[in-house]
Picture 1 (cartoon, chains in turn green, orange):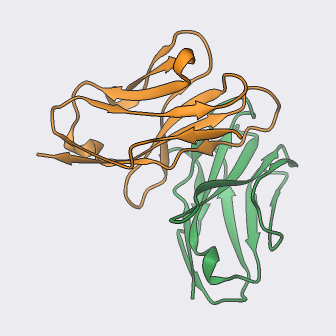
Picture 2: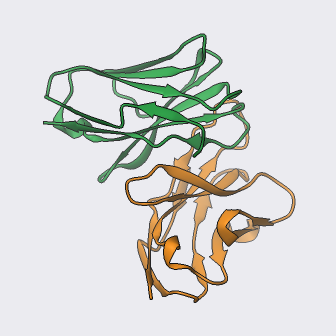
Picture 3: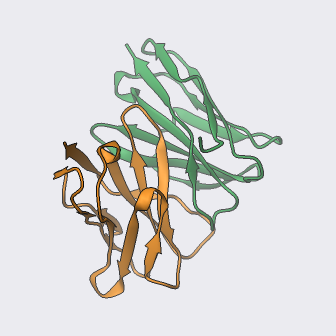
Length: 112
Length: 115
């Protein structure tokens, strides 16, 4: 158990819908990261927050957005869902951007 | 372009045999280097990390990795594999400079262990 929690574990939804994935970092960690894992793209970095501020963006679609709240938990919002958005979404956290990242168990999103 | 290469997609070893998983990176400077393991249906678990210093690093579950600057490699090794080591292994790097620290992953190596 890494100490990073993600909810829900599984999510099944239809095309065009919007979902929110939630992440709670390890106690004391200020940085939160989101990654997407799919068969065709592998593990891809989406976005990073540090103490509430966005620090880096990767290959994140405009339909996707995220935020980190004052209590340091983070949410990833995915809208206008397409079949190709089906993937495992991981959250990771670290003490700061200079330290190793610990991953949560992931949320498996299935878009039908 | 910056990249991480894991040349072996799939490796099969017998239980008790030694293991080496290869990882090569292409970056302007020495990045931070990591190995993660993912069991089926599970998240990613950090096995070990290299930031600086001793080029041979020890990790959890009996794994070790050696950083070789001249070869831009960070290969993962284990002297004696157990059946429970069957999983997918990912090498990852983070640029050394800057405050952004997005991990760039290799494509992974799937390890199968035969009894």
